[in-house]
Amino acid sequence: MALEDELLRQRHQRIAQIQQLGFAPYGHAFDFTHTIPRLLAGYSAKTAEELAGDPIRVRIAGRIQTIRRMGKAGFLHLQQEGEKLQIYIKKDALPENEYKLYELLDTGDIVGAAGYLFRTKTGELTIHVEQLVFLSKIMLALPEKWHGLEDIETRYRQRYLDLIANPDVRRIFVTRANIVRSFRRQLDSRGFLEVETPMMQPLYGGAAARPFVTHHNTLDLDLYLRIAPELYLKRLVVGGLERVYEINRNFRNEGISTQHNPEFTMLEFYQAYADFRVMMQLTEELLRQVAIDATGSPRVSYQGLSADFDHFNRLSMREAVIEFWPGATKPSLDNVKDPEWLSLHSKEKSPGAALVELFEEYAEPNLTNPTIVHGFPVEISPLSKTNPEDPSIVDRFEVFAGGVEIGNAFTELNDPQEQRRRFEMQLARKAAGDQEAHVMDEDYIRALSYGMPPAGGEGIGIDRLTMLLTNSKSIRDVILFPLLRPEGEIGLVAKLREVAP
RNA sequence: GGGCCGGUAGCUCAGCUGGUAGAGCAUCGCACUUUUAAUGCGGUGGUCGCGGGUUCGAUUCCCGCCCGGCUCACCA
Image (cartoon, rainbow, N blue to C red; front, top):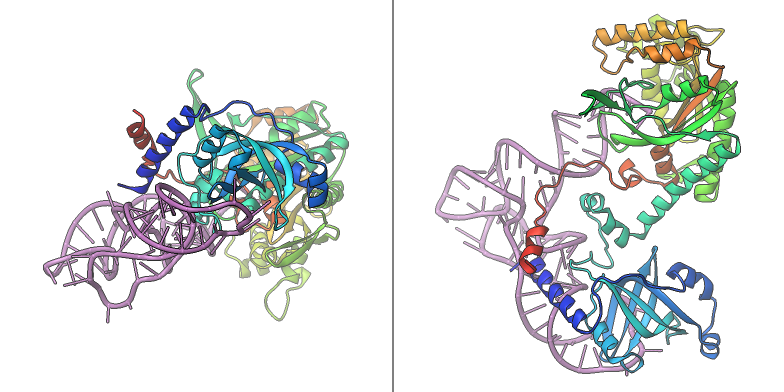
């Protein structure tokens, strides 16, 4: 018989024994005086003498992490919110049925305990238990205690086990929440309004990507999961919501990698009467504060390299290509502007696309320190305003850190005629086979035709920023439930049915 | 989608040029009323990812498939 079947049988019997002792195997509310982290914060400084002289009575709850049984006594560690506290059980100190309950406990059970604090011989702060309450029964076996759970697939599929076994995982997601909270607080205090725009859209736009398609039955309507909220947020700017932001999921039907998950979280914000220069300044201020709120410092280390959010670099895409050019003789500024020179060094047809290719190949991986790169080619930027001095580039920048793009911003194109022409260019590309080209969004053109104030807009990838600020190598480490293929038959239901039909 | 690597007990892992599977933890039993990787003694537990082939014999060799990781391509 497999161990798991045997375990389920044992645990099922144990539930009956727990009930016979007068306890519910799955309890209800439990009134506690402290969480374990709060108790540790409050009393870790107390000496054995102080605790003995003035007994402090507490009630706590938690999951049993370890049990060390020694005849008629035992020590258990309870775990709660990533921290652990030891409790001491002694036969003489408990009612008989509660001591019998202790004898039935398994690591992984959730219990409540009441008693007074003391320090053991070895000095560990411990609760001398006078009352034991049963709260929830574990049926399966927890991962082993000192290697924890290491199998990456299991960690992603059964994130709850990962959270129980690996305290660092909890910290990553706490940091992620702090990052989001920091953005909200900063944007709110600058007068931005948080909004929610459609995730299901009849037309998709705002980015170059292939969408997911779904279907509404009653309307008999195909809808796209949004690839970006951009066009809706700018409609709101037209409507007079001059500072808006949204933090929500985008969905792109493309490859999966350590830097790409099909659904990912994006912050987008728009500020009327600003341009990309203003957004650069705002970006630096926001990211610096986020780094501090998430890690305590504007200087973070990522995969052995350092990134200083106090000191952003700024350079144009052309400058970046020159600076990181691999050969001994670097190209000149005239070279990187010259369509012929660009076509010699890239397979891309248009000069702009060629420049971007060279940038992504040579410069991007080297942009470890936070860097603002501006001067993007117009061909790949259908929603940005062109630069007044150089119509081949747009007033757009991207923010890089840790060698990846974490943000993208531009002066918004608000001329409906120009926007119409850009969409038409995109349609031509789509006709030529570019699956990621924009579609024509006539309602968006109509909105612009009512007049949109000049505005700057920006998107920041929350997942990638979280990777950087938690030193995580894979985006899956900062997404609680990353997309995986289905795992197939689990088989637990049949086993549970067999144990208790 | 391509290339490389991996999947052995609940967990973490070993298993040689093919000979019928092992450790630690967990689990079960016994002893132990201040332990902390508690300790000591004894036990249970495996469709070796799945399917086919070669072979007297396959966890091991070959082929196909499934799942995962890294990487390239695409992308944020």
